Length: 284
Length: 258
Image 1 (spheres, each protein chain N blue to C red):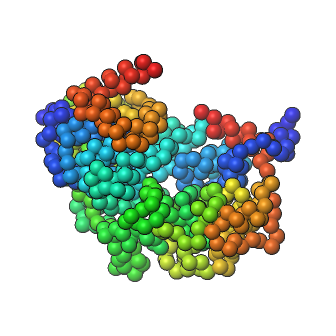
Image 2: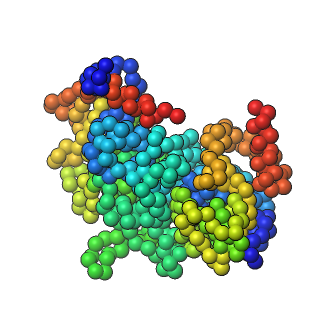
Image 3: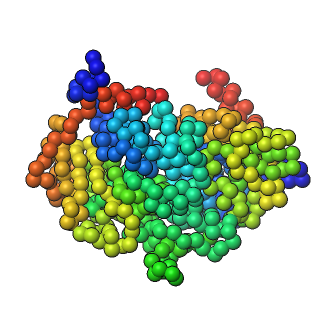
């Protein structure tokens, strides 16, 4: 269990200003608690990586943690725009944000190359688009066997990869199930890896499909409901009302700043934040 | 009333979104393997599975293969998609083994802007470095467009969306037309249908230029032309889109109900 720690200590030890950091989770198991802790500890100048920078990265970008973003789709799923992300791109508030954009397929090939220890990956992609004109990490190469033109995309090797999972066992191995996204590749592509889990169990649930051994994980922290407002299959559902409410909270700089201060900066940890949300819901 | 009698009854009270969804559903064939995103495509594919195409195979980019949700899901990562799927695979696998390898028949696409050859923009309005409107970006679209056997585009028609020149090409359709798409070396035949709130467009067999083939009940050619940012080609034998039947509408509302 030597890798099991608190989220506060895991972020303090492993995330440094200026790091390239990937928080993954494709609609499911989004590591919100870890994102909040990065905001709480006021990390700066991060180059954030994520296929779908949704509300979690809107919060981190708006809170001033990021100077760069590598991504493939940025929106609030089913709701609309990310207002903090858009204001950073449009007018450089609170900081200018250097963006590097790919497609989903391109990002997944980049992570896979990174996890495989290769300098790049290949794919049939990006043909006939303007994406290649603005993204330096895409080149066209010729297949050495058939001559077919292929896209080459540079490997992604973040300094830190962060995911949320259902369970860790008592030895610090991590297991998850349901929609698995690109989490395994993101962890194995990264130099350091942090995982938050719902609980520690004696032995894994029979539904576990992906297992990451303890010795590839720098830190594992137990954070119940750590993916809220996204969901954890088998534990809790997506909080759709939160995603809808985010549109209004994030639209205005002052409203957003007030939310970050009361819900993140002035809370002790994610459990404290969740207790605040639960009590405000009870008042409604 | 028998089911057949309901089926032949034409509905009169339906929304534009319902009309577009039903057309997208009709365009799918039984047995098609369909790559869907959230919104109209997902609802349309689930409607097809409940009506004329029970063996349609639904694949979501979140990695759920042959999923059979009871209702159209709210997000591509909905837990019910994983619970009802034959297989749940990773994102790298869904794009590499399933889409890129050619196992998808039909891909659905939407956009903020479309041009006369069905190329799409979902990235920026205005200049890339100083955008007027920053949009979500590419997502799965660029590879759906070149990996699927064909694509179906669903988009409301206006001079804002149907533009003479895209501000940014996120996703290739028929490229510059007249067979230039194939010359890029891409697989799949590209957009076969564009479904709008006014009518149905299909590419010209020679020039690949989108041509108005059908108008929805109550809509006019003048409206379609006025809502298009280039001189719109109109088929010589323009048809009227069959209005939704009561059966289609009932099934759609069951699939959509949440």
